[in-house]
Length: 309
Ligand code: CP
Ligand code: NVA
Image (cartoon, rainbow, N blue to C red; front, side, top):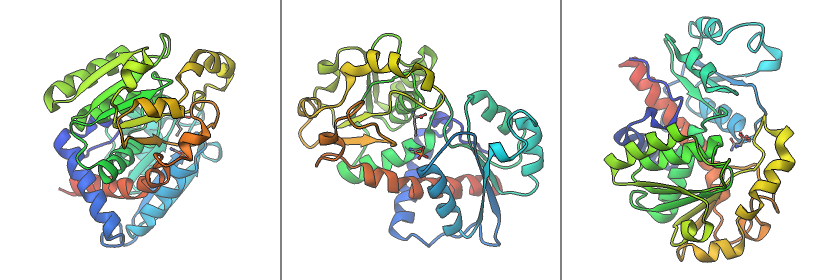
């Protein structure tokens, strides 16, 4: 059966653990799995700009023995000239998997609908699930068992990162808190989905405005840009609305002792986070960025094994 990874809760808690355990194995023994030897190709399509996602998929597919086919939408027929569905019908006969960074989640759903190869969300307006696999791997490396840990996200809670933290951390059995002002809080349906998952995993979900209460005792403090790709027109309004949610050394002082700081990057120092924090001793952002490689390799190996079963 073909499995896709369009949102974080496309993996059950047990499946998420399996992928993360495989990621740790592939990190320890980086060249041990070559399921794409042949080589088989994987299409990686970008409607938006990228550094980490582009590099980690390219390197990861190569290390798995495959051939990465990096496609910029601007130089392809996708995006105006051809539908996602027709694109899938063409690609699926030639590649082992399709990875796509795009705007609307509905485009990914259209791409995956009936596709005979796995489709992976490499960031949409709504979710960034590959990033969360890397983040959970990083939390595990620095703090041990993720279940039962508390993570607080400050800032733009209605963004892809806010939504993905809700779903992925609930799946991992974590206590996930979103600190965001009204108007920037996560979508109600995503909160409800995360609450349903947390009820099964022993995690919990809290959304609110009170920074002090939400940061208190957190093991992991995270934030993301206030101006996500596609939201550039709203820049000043977002800075005004979110400035109280900047992660400062004072914020970190309210978290648990030994708390770590994560940021998916790219970062705007002095806006969502102070340089003293992101470049300081609690920050593990470079491990997090590297872990994109290991987490996505594990995800591809796992999805391709399911597709072959
Ligand atoms: N974190 C992340 O997805 O980075 P890029 O936009 O550089 O891919
Ligand atoms: N929320 C950010 C994440 C970048 C990796 C964006 O969508 O631009």
